[in-house]
Length: 241
Image 1 (cartoon, rainbow, N blue to C red):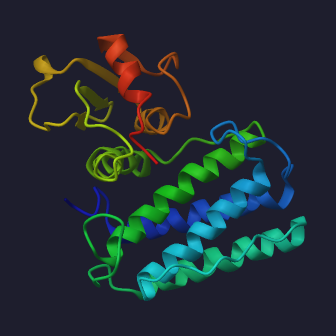
Image 2 (image 1 turned 45 degrees about the vertical axis):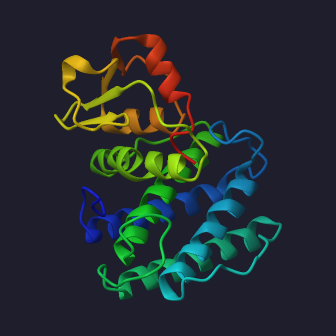
């Protein structure tokens, strides 16, 4: 398993841009606005989650230990400061750590490159969530999104199965990004296009949102061929945390 389809320096660039965009929403957005992609959360709760993840990931790179709980404060000014403090500390560690450095991770590879990629993807999805809570989500970077699709197929889905959160898939879904890259969600990765049960095609950013349940097969930017029932079954499964 590779650390990703993109380079660590690209992931670092994306992380910096996405955390800045998240902070921008936090500085002016309605903190009580519900987050459509995270039922039960508002913008403040989403911030508490992402800020906690940033602190947890930083310690994972440094020591492999869990982060002590640091509850997010109330009030916009304090919350913005708390979020920025955690995000900046994580970025500092990620930039100062060699990607090949061995460290504890939640899945292979057990190197810092894993966290560099994972935190770029985590922050990007939740930036989109934050903007979505205000009704104005901006598109994900196409290259970042393509890397995110690969992460779901290569790491997140297998981890869900390994942890017992999702039974192994009994059907197959081919994912075709309009840039020509293809992936297969199935127990076997060597299936030919003719042998898969369903295929979804679309721009990388839309397909990533679909895999993370931020959009649906009814999205006009997605093209479906094969069994619609299988596609809905797999996309409705616990293929992501």
